[in-house]
Amino acid sequence: MKKFFWVLALLLSLSFMGCSLKTNVQVDFEKSSSTSSGTVSNPVKRNLEYSLDITYSKSMMKFLIINNTSKDIELIFPNTHTFDFILTKDGNVVFDDYKDNPNSAKNNWETHQLLKANGDKNYVGQGYDIWYESLPKKISDGSYNFEFYSTSEKLKDVPYLKGQLEIKNGNVNVNSIRLN
Figure 1 (tube, rainbow, N blue to C red):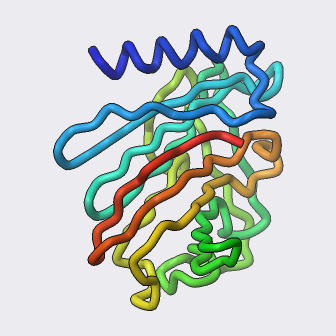
Figure 2 (tube, rainbow, N blue to C red):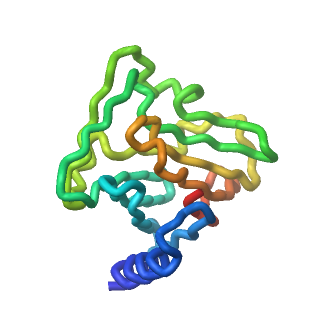
């Protein structure tokens, strides 16, 4: 029920802003002892509406793009670089998941992903997981900025999901998330 309230409050605040995301929009989180999650929705183009769901726990962050229109949307990528997660500190990139994660597929074949209509969360191809264990050991304790985005041409107008996280003794805590 709390999540519904936060989503409704966020949607109402977006409608009062004219749904323009040229400024930052803070994403509120529903928190439990082990997992936190939040959702933001916004019409990007007349024919494309989307939501971004983010869930983070002690071991990973999950980003999920949801199609709220009445038709399926096919995303086409020229290669296997479909989403990106970049971690920066003091303006310098310290981790680019696509470039630095040895588990990321780096192939030159065309990739297709389907975003099912009507908010269906099929989780195949519409999201991206960041496992904290994939972060390099050289990343020290401190505050970091992150951004997550799709590399699809069709989603080029979708604002980046940006935020700040704190790493301390190997534990990750997400402090803020916003759309830019």
